[in-house]
Image 1 (tube, rainbow, N blue to C red):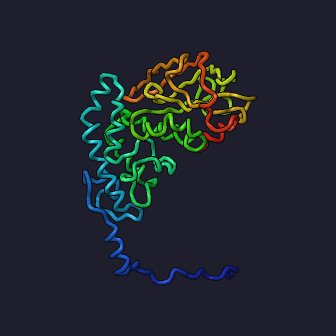
Image 2 (cartoon, helix red, strand yellow):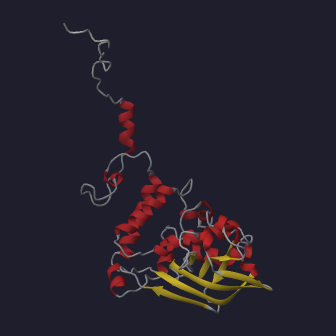
Image 3 (tube, helix red, strand yellow):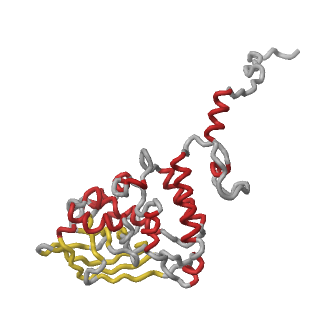
Length: 298
């Protein structure tokens, strides 16, 4: 005979199948959050909220900002991008001033940077990460080529100056970068030190009221467009505690900037920079000596 099982019979705990019901209030909220269709309505061709779907994240300020971005890209970049690439030209630097005039950022949307933009271009409550995502989306839709790429570099090189730079250091560069008149690049990577920032070898030795800067920097994006560099140098011993930041004017004697050729060159580009006994005022030190590694984490 069959032996009875020692396990109790399984119970179906699922119960009767339930139908998900959406309350009238929830349905109205979803309908109210749906956006007016914008751009190409081919399936998947635009972000979902461009195609009339509801969103819990995007609001009226994002819709208006998207319109500004799309108009700028279509009028100023799309008609010219192929020509810039074919002729291996850098995109015109006056595009930054034109962008600002249309209410678009020139140096990212970090909070410290936002406070320097004209008040009339900043939406109520300020820009958020989604505004920046919209801007990047719209620029990317123009096609590969790096147009307006220096704005992204400005957004990386400027925060240490705003956070730790003296009023005199900030006066040299901040307002002009925000206005689109000048640019600034972040100069960290070297032939022997890429992501290992604490291993940089470029030196800045103090001599009176100047630092004597020597060394090389490689893969410095936008270096040929930059008027200034937020330059990482070694002022102390090994490791991160020996790293400092200097604001360096590209016109300083002893600086050579060479645009690097890449497999797909863009209308932005990257550079190799050599510092050969370049004398930088001590007053251009950003913050404190030895604190540069920490400032780069901003």
